[in-house]
Length: 175
Image (tube, rainbow, N blue to C red; front, side, top):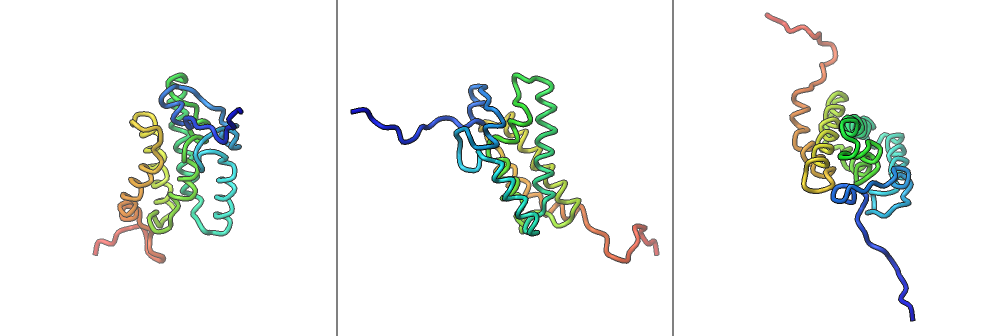
């Protein structure tokens, strides 16, 4: 009697690249055709959920857009420097928990900055940390660590970027 196979285990696309330099097509990761953890594959559905939350005004859309744009730009720079050593920006965006973290975790209303300029800075810091941790860290993923570090500096971002009180001028009064 032949045994039946219920499931197959293997490396996620991000760890396969980190340790073996094997890439997976971004198209396969976006549609969830490849293997991977929940939230790491089928990013199209995560994006649809994020659009729904932004449409319902339940999350600030600037945070995930800032994170994804920053990750794309910095990973594209490194990919242009050495395309064999660094993954493509599309692979970087669609692999790992980037979309899940950017859309559902970093947008927490309690731990993210309040001002519009603050959330752009917050997202850019998280995106930069994701690229740094993924490229030079010991672990293949870096999204959760980057979000935790971003949450730690969020109050400082709010203190540095304060909105002007309505009715006041930008000039400081000397008297």
